[in-house]
Image (cartoon, rainbow, N blue to C red; front, side, top):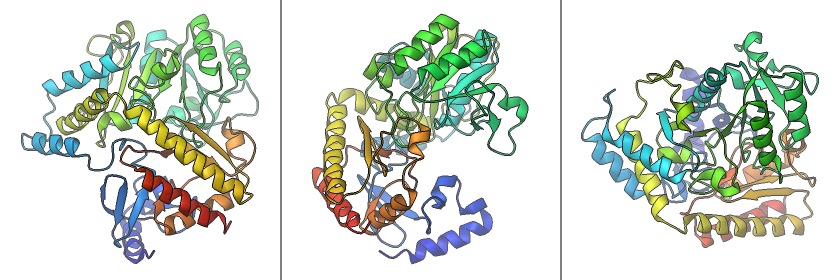
Length: 428
């Protein structure tokens, strides 16, 4: 495939946009080459500016769970746009989607909508600190919760030391209140809690990690976090920006039967438009302004176009009793096919999968946390990525990202993907 027009557009973009992109992973820095510029998308396919058709396994990083340009969502947005695109005032739609989300998700009473997953997680942390009157939080290496200052922290020198900023612009003062733990390691979390008694407001975690590839929680990990939080007066925050309304109607709380205190949403809840949300029990959510002292606001929060898209998407998922089973079955089919291909070609790999999330790690050892994810052979991944791209299959341009399966994928599409992977694997 040729990407002449994409290359031209990228060169033009670099002159006026930092790095030529508005989100760093799009720049292809991790894999080399020039990013693809999209012209349109429909169903399971992207169509780029050079006229190439690409089978899409990113799906806008998760929200296109029913396929690109899903007709009910498109029509809902069109009809709502005719009535006005933004008011900065309450609309009935906001209450309708809030009521549906509360109905679908266990253990929440109220929800507040924002404009992104980053906003949702940032606001959840502020709420947790205000509610508990404590300052410190625990996050996990490799879990991404947006680019708010509190989350851009790397490991310190020991298991119970403070983190340090890994982005210029994040102050040491902010970093000292963020403690870094190892995903799937309860003993590490216990040590952090013990070393910071009565100082920790919240533990925030991707209950299924998706930002170091797909890494499911090991048996007992989430349950252990729940127990530790309950015993120590700490709020447990599930960042379900990726997993919410994707792995089950009620997200990971429903799927794995573990309750969080605050849950953050994004991706699917917006139906493809910029939406985030955070939700909790009455007593926690009532700490938010205008009822309580914790301030959070947004002029575009509850935007009518975004609410129309999100409500239509949630209604579609809520009314289709088999959609999550179909998605899981397609993902399992892809898993089996890729596993066979990589084994036949004697390539070291590990495939992680849960529901409609899957990732291929080019290392034979189990991948359970950020350290083990980082052992993957990046050179092999780069070759695999570009080989698949040339074959017409678009996967995430980073070894540290999950693939997202859409219900628009057919089994013929999956067979095409497996066949392409076989041809690429022969060249690795």
